Image (tube, rainbow, N blue to C red; front, side, top):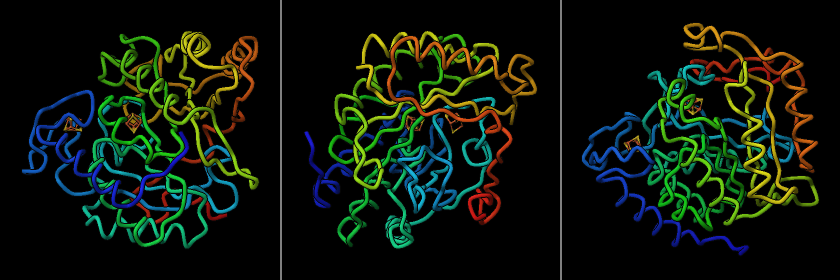
Length: 320
Ligand code: SF4
Ligand code: SF4
């Protein structure tokens, strides 16, 4: 299917998402708290959008940035607790501000006026009802950009059903191939089954990546695989699973940018960057398996800059 929901239909989906938030089953943790009454669960979020940054960002894969940058909306907090989180200031810290849905809609329109290639919702699942309310309002006021949904992959099927026809491009991580690692480093002991089911649903909704004549992603799926040191991400296993469940033309983004941040120093096996040899071996594996569309990073990516969300310009290098 290739259609886009109207503002009215998105508003109805926002209502569905609100029902799913009280008791909360917006994500696989199913905390059961009544978010609409202000109760907070694992993600510590209440009944308003809480955002950390809204900015044109040039650090994403090329079809997501093209000339104007990705129009990123970074939502605060997260439903995972990765010990190495690059965005820990906002995912596990307190940075962010509560805004109204109207303000968030205006911010999306501002990104469009800046010439951004899309609206990229980063870690939105735990704030889905409020994101969708804002999106409905922005569409009503003329927002006409593709919607990119950047997610850790730890998504509930009910949430993805709500998003069908709203999200144009899914950008999920497949962080682990072992629940033991997922439990130890991200507090998600059921990650592998959940994320694999989620990525399969995403592909069945939007299919392979499609770009327009300007090279901008307008539909489809990009699976992100962040290489962690010492094989912790289990990328080879993930590649084998992808090969068995998707066409060889599915788009992968194999990332070398890991840096040992946040609590990584407490885990000696994570307290290092990856080696060129580790990264090359994974790329070889992906090519040998026949994948045709792979975005790769250079080995300096881990040194390119760490966002500082306490600044007005968290990606200050984007300005240069
Ligand atoms: S899923 Fe992403 S944002 Fe959330 S804690 Fe892990 S690395 Fe950070
Ligand atoms: S969205 Fe938050 S409160 Fe709801 S189930 Fe997930 S972690 Fe719990």
